Length: 191
Image (cartoon, rainbow, N blue to C red; front, side, top):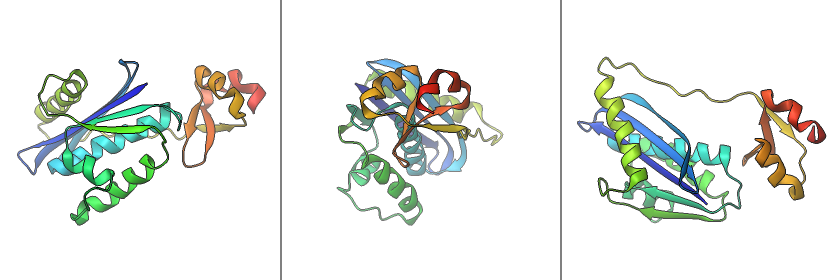
């Protein structure tokens, strides 16, 4: 079971902004990504955090995995699940990207959690956001790097668990398994 937590914030609103997403597998932190965004709004930071979290899901999860999403932003949750319309033009592009990723997964459940309620995952992502907002006083923007070195493999569905254990990841857009180039020796039978 996978759990994703994300949080974004700005002080004031708009103001210095940061985001963080954290992906857990069976309650163990697998990966987290966060950073300082510079001057932005709270809603943009919340969406940046959630989108970053969805990219972690694409990297680590299979489309049939059980995935729980925990958000403290009702706006992001309700717009992603299409319960609310996206009225803010500046959010439409990222909202659409989030909706498109979510549509690929069959067992994804959304839960709203109250901020600062003692939830460990939410506390973690909130703490990272606060760290970046407080430490980045000179508008130094921390950027995440995209992994460009994907090698696609020909892995039959019956062998997906073996490939996944060796480090293969699922690309939802291409609908193929891929590996980073440094793992090529372990995947010769699927090349």
